[in-house]
Length: 184
Length: 184
DNA sequence: TCGCCAAGTCAGCACTTGCTGACATAGCAA
DNA sequence: TTGCTATGTCAGCAAGTGCTGACTTGGCGA
Image 1 (tube, rainbow over the protein chains, first blue to last red):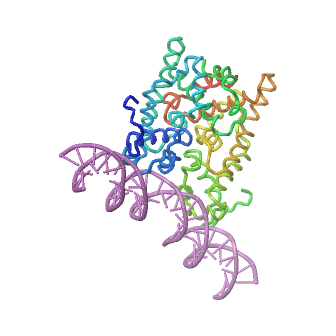
Image 2 (cartoon, chains in turn cyan, green, brown, purple):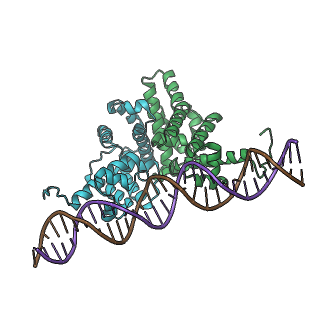
Image 3 (cartoon, chains in turn blue, cyan, brown, orange):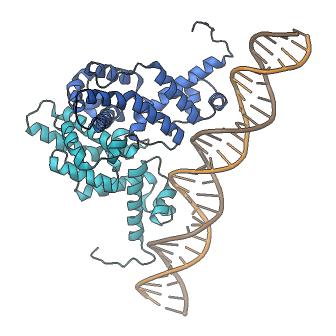
């Protein structure tokens, strides 16, 4: 940014960035195994061989995506009802993140699996657990896990094409129903 | 059954049955795309070429699985709290069925996709919708879809390895929390 | 016994996957 | 200008995919 490199024809930083972005989108849309390196390269407008060069492997590219997302720290907690709307909006705009994918279907690659689980823990389960603990509810950990899993079911369901009204519904309509799920 | 064929060494009916069963299990464990015809054949103890012979293709084998499951009619409705326990038990024993998979992640093959959606509709969403309608709640369809999606999130989460306590929890512990999700 | 056909086996085709290595070239330093 | 290196391109390998077709073999009726 501050360096203001104007995207030379040869610019490895720019290529890396585009690969990350394309991988981010495709991971959200299709998950890890169903995304090919050729897909990523095509969407990024970058030769697929550069994935291996810059990131080492497809798996490490996706792990880099997770780490990059972790950095932005903008993911709202489910504990705050107001911010659940933000979450819906964000998901509507960017698709369900890779973190959601892994909550619902395990990935073959152990390293990818581990990184995604850590992200899920830090960004969704742990904050909710604290919320329930603060409220003095019993089994706060189990409650947090159930609530997270249920919420992710709704999020993923919106994109799976299996739920007509759910997919079409406006987040504000969903909010009261989803708050029911979360205040376990 | 009534014919009582004692499983000759050559028995196409038996082979078909074993292929169906193996496909059923693997679809539940790994989903459609991540299951190979060789996997199915190996688990069934039947040559994989017979899948093409008897069912036409891998996709049609899985559709046959869906149809067969539909027939048994034993799937409990979520509307009946008592039977939610049965559902957990059944899923614990057999794994999450193919119907659950597709609710959360779309499949590439359109025919498989369509068959799974129909099964989801008939066996989960519609009964719940009726339940909500009978109770006079507004937006029964949307409620049914949200509840189904949330429930499936919990079911899938139990198997995804991302939720420690949820995976370890006994269904009877889960029941009160899940009933909260469902009585929207 | 013989011949036929359903049932089962096997090798391999055509394709896709992640990844690699040889090559080409832009841009900069000397 | 002349090299040198970071950057990008390309073809292709090895493994794995669904599916096919030629082949063998078991079991039964004639």
